[in-house]
Image 1: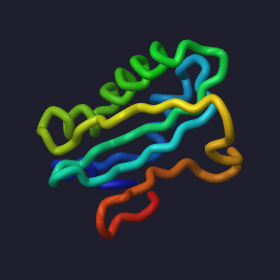
Image 2: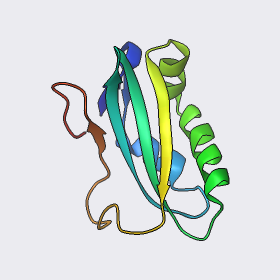
Image 3: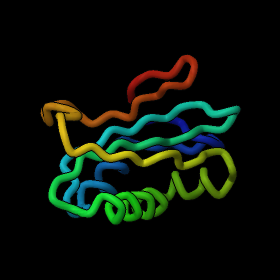
Image 4: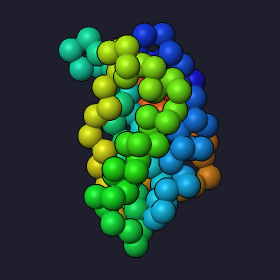
Length: 110
């Protein structure tokens, strides 16, 4: 679990539940970083056989369906950053628990 802007808590299972149903999504990585005092959440999606632009729009909407993210964004404590995609390479082996990488000072993997 990672604390995000405004004291809200984001669990990796919240992201998995919201993102894995998206068509064409194979895997993803999530990173939380500090951007001038505001938390920023960035995603990289590994996609297969899908329209990348549409997948990124759907991913952003899915993120905002997560209550902690919606509240943090609405309070101004969190910004949704870039959603990037990759069609090559492997983001993970699929055998490890999904984590949220916390790149803020003193942060860690969730």
